[in-house]
Image 1 (cartoon, rainbow over the protein chains, first blue to last red):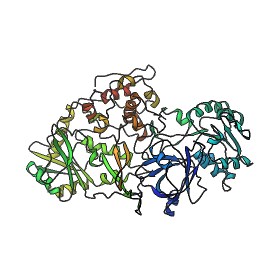
Image 2: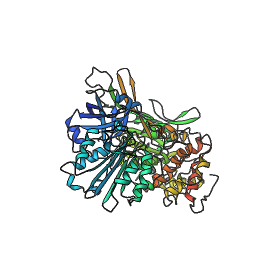
Image 3: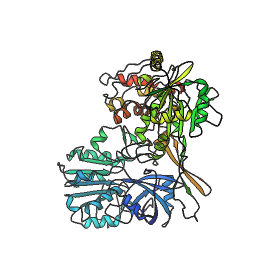
Image 4: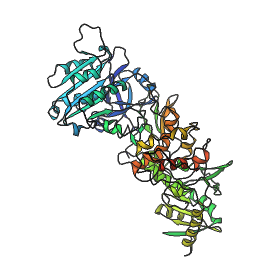
Length: 281
Length: 357
């Protein structure tokens, strides 16, 4: 019987400090047993439990894309017991990764559609995974227009800065980067909050357009009316939730919202589904 | 199906024989109460009981259980590599379980044995257990099993059902596992043709004394958000002190926490029963808590048992009517009353029936 609580042993291959306040680091892991990488076959939008024996486990969205081979990447905010410890770990250290877990973004539905990605702050990790997945030469033809709106408080708080700049140069991706404010005279992208940029730059809705929205609650609250005005149906708005969880496989009971488990039935839900659920997230 | 007759003088000696091949669990008197315990040599259990204070869920699902061991020795090759904990493979015999509690394992199995994932710890313990039920002859005031798809002589989830027929026991052997256990105990005397009628007669008598009834028939068709937003939750939760007793004594509460503990250079990953009554259960690292108030948590417990479970599995409520939470609650919150309120709730008028039980 496969033990869903068993984490695959991994080595920390690289640690990248992402933000100027050093609160976000990206960890690149390599599986000790290369066979485990095949067992860990995942889809963009899924998550995993990062497992540090002696400290505990934390559920974190997978930031690498299934198209990237040889490693798996996570961007982690330093906030609680396990993440604080993880931030003190070094390249070469051994720990565990358990998953992949959750349902992913609905890629079968999204194929052949326009996709609008709206992200804020550090909720951009599975969105990065999705973008890298979609713009991979093997996949780009499967999607129509791709629009990305991503905002952070300041330029120094943006994740994946080099990639963002490279994506902004591409002609097969409408890239809109924004910051709440900056006094940097060199700043060449938007200034303003994500909902305002969405209002200016997001395409009008039609039956072939889906929006994926991930960000802090305040961003989601003000983005939703903008999408409503643009005509997006609530079955065309996808969101990824977080709740405290332990098992990740729908058994421990911690992350339920009504009869759904964020870990197993989510983390991705349509706004239609969320409207039918208690607001316990 | 075979019915055997067990002379009461053969009961304790049969249990003793079972210990050669099984770890035997049975009710044991613990001061004023009974608890399920693994019997030592020479111990026969005490079957003069209404029901155990804690449910026998711990025979399959211990309150604390080691999942993995690991080394915390930086110089060791297996530093921070988890190794599965070796489990005792000896079959278990759970003797004297009440039918309601046996049925609870069927409800809980839906959580631990799913098409997507199987919990190997729960499932292996469950599969190696043989459940020998003992029919109730003296139901409690707080029992409402007959409203919860089970009953004092229910056979669901059991390998054999033992009935106290006064001068001797009569036992219905329900599965091959049950027959194997009875052979091992030496309980093999076939009962005469009147036994089945005698069991039915006793059953009818006990069921007629179970007067506590709860309505559940409308729970499935109620709209989830209507019940969630019903006005009675503040009142239901008012006296709750979030002690969690209801969840610990409940045979169908399965929620757990996973924690790492280290002792010098050794470490273990363990899981412990947890309770949705506690604020930490849902607290995010950010400080945000989706069920931050007592009302949220009380509502969660009842909605889970009486609505979310009903909708998820379409197979009745997540409650077997054992009445433990009713008996043990220090502030007299009564699931029968709450169930009747939810069942009879009319969202148009925001009115529900309120009964004393």
